Image 1 (tube, rainbow, N blue to C red):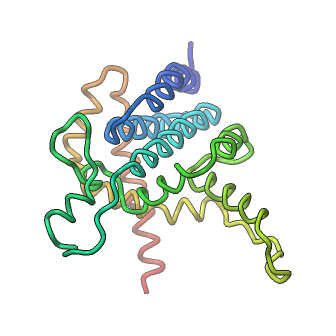
Image 2: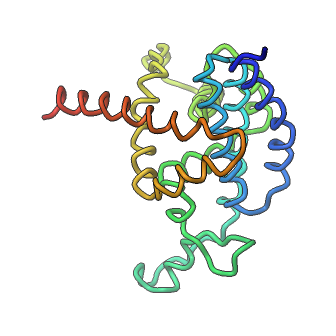
Length: 234
């Protein structure tokens, strides 16, 4: 009888090629963001199943989607310099146009935070050679920040540095970076219609487990975050 871990592997492997192909072909930010979010759901499922290989594969899909979103955001026309920053024309120039929708949608409507937008656009500028090398390296968990760290390290070795700055920097623990990144979760979760999304999980055959898992995870996370807030409340 297949285990949950086996099911996670099958689910991720089944979608890997299709999702990677879709990422490359998509020309609209909202479409790639949808793939990014689905990959994140697969990543969570694989982690809960303690299937690290499937989790790593889902991470790769998510980071590839982030790079593609960054490239699409970089293709936006730059806002005209000068003028009233509060004008309608300026505000429209800051919006992301969705090919499938004649009305422009903002990053907020897409569920993309300012930090994500900035990070993903930087990710899009990483040379493919560097990006693929990080994708192939399975020695550490995969994230957009890890790709950027490797890229910056590569750039640093090509630039002359002063003697006093040649000492190797202490690498920040990945969990510290992840904990800091929780602000992106909070920024997004307040915009979500929780009731509708929980109902959405039960509307798809084979994904009903996500609703109960989400509720249980929310209870546990709420308890943990509350204890952190109480302990370090300034």
